[in-house]
Length: 73
Image (tube, rainbow, N blue to C red):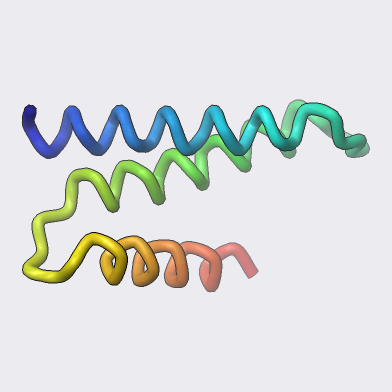
């Protein structure tokens, strides 16, 4: 399996899980909140799955997740 395909699958799964968690919540603009959450989590999942670095998987995940959460502020 190619790294891009793995990244796409990881991104979709991570995004869908996040959307599923957010569905019962209430927001002023629910469509925008869920869309933004999906895009952000898809980006994290894609980067983690597609990256080819000489680090263990868990450090790669923490690094990308930490960086993406810092950018959301």
